[in-house]
Image (cartoon, rainbow, N blue to C red; front, side, top):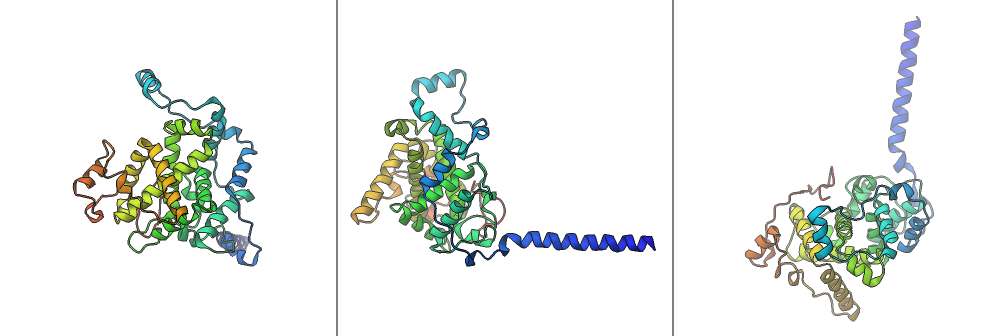
Length: 335
């Protein structure tokens, strides 16, 4: 008799556990956010202020803001490399790298507002959306939880996307790129691509290729924001004009990164010119060919191979080394 009772209790416990597990699995999407008052949109400066006033001491201990060079490499870099960042900008630079170490925190209202703002500005919706769910794939995350895509660049990638969608002058460009990302043939995951632009910008900052511009403007965050947008603009124009598809992504990203780091000043000037044309209402005629394919980066085999066949986009058949399936499932292979 006792054995039967024990088995019954075990069964009840098992059922209760299954019900609880089921409840937990659906809980994130259960709350009807549409009935709630939408959270106020958050500006880039407000989000930045949050990090400026948060204790990031533990994260600052683990950052690597420059490349450690020794021996001949260190001497060569000192003699022929870019200028060092001014001492009074080091704290701002370190903050950037600390934000890149910061993960998405459901308990931080600022983090959640950044996420909601990105979604609402890209999709032109007024209501908040659930924290988890397939709707995040609509803006180019790769699953039901954006946090899983933030490897390597942490919250900085969300800060860059926030800057892109909240600056009224560059929002039209963000929406143009987002529109291309939804193209039936040329589609790509927008937010994952944005994360890659942040990764390129972060590498450029670490390799000190942005130091000269940062010193000139006496800013780090603003220079990095502009470089991120300029890199995304270059990728967009290249992707669109040469009919790139997701299978080309690996080589395209390598090419964009090589060229961005070799020509940071040119990239930033091109963004300036693009925005000036927009303000003047003359459209945006600047072609990526004027940068990357009439003058391919030395050692950039993908770019050179493409240039030999002329500038016709359809002839430039790159094989992506980091291919991402069209259904955008699984790992963030673009990263």
